[in-house]
Image (cartoon, rainbow, N blue to C red; front, side, top):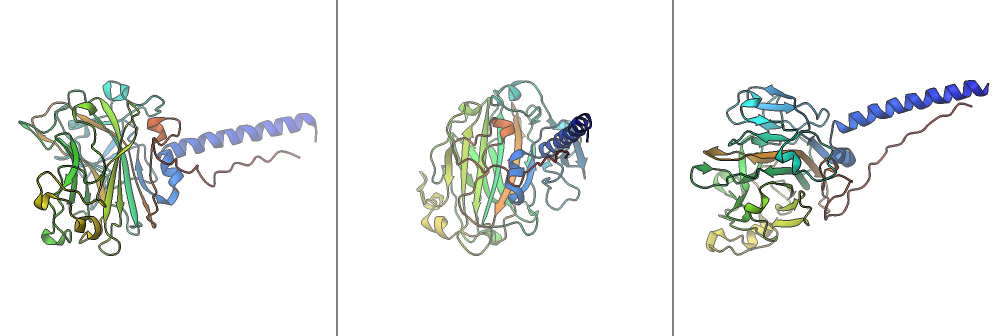
Length: 358
């Protein structure tokens, strides 16, 4: 074989591999990188890094960027990860900024171009979806990023339901509680009830925590992006006690990650009585039904100012409860860092081989 032929042959192989590599990278980036790293433990991923949304069944909206592990609204096919209360066109309630304050507040090193934002004064309904049948129940987690505009109005006066954060649900039956919220500078939840067998216990909790450390004041998070991760231990009605934790990190200012809720810790509330998170709540709580939804709750009504934006929702699940975390989206935070948690493992089973001409 002539040297000239070998050179051309090798150059051709190199160009083919380069094209295939670029195509592979483009496919991977359609999903969040962390979802690919988690493999089968990634249930669904919605980066919301697009300005194109399909409206399905009048109220569910599907972004164009996620294609293989999409989050789907429960009970609706086709659905989407975003349910807009009241339905209508996408632009009636939402927009996809690629500039402005929400983009300017993203961490240095971010690579996403768009985020999903509610229009001024509006909420965005619910983001998430029902986890498919067969999803492991020992440990579930969701992670998302949320931004509050510099003029965002919290609950007060004519502005209602403006502090909600997330909630649990099952089988498309709506919320089962708890509903996570920010209230008067504290981060807590409410809605754990045994009415109708939703839970095996009742609690008026909570005006803080329980467990964890105090979160940032509401005024201090205006104009900031926060990474929020919710960990659910045992989503099933039987077995080990059902518990949850909530982690928070201000990624705009790169502050340390903190744990603001840990229901394994019995906590006395200022109100006392049934508002306390009791030792029974902490050690023997169970849902009446399998929890298979952990949704971001963006509902808001009344007369409010400001808006919220979201990015990079990811749901994961494991068959063991061994400290696993989702951690940071590198597309948001850059550099592959995971804040103040154990870094995730590198991608596995990614191998490129080059066969040279002989």
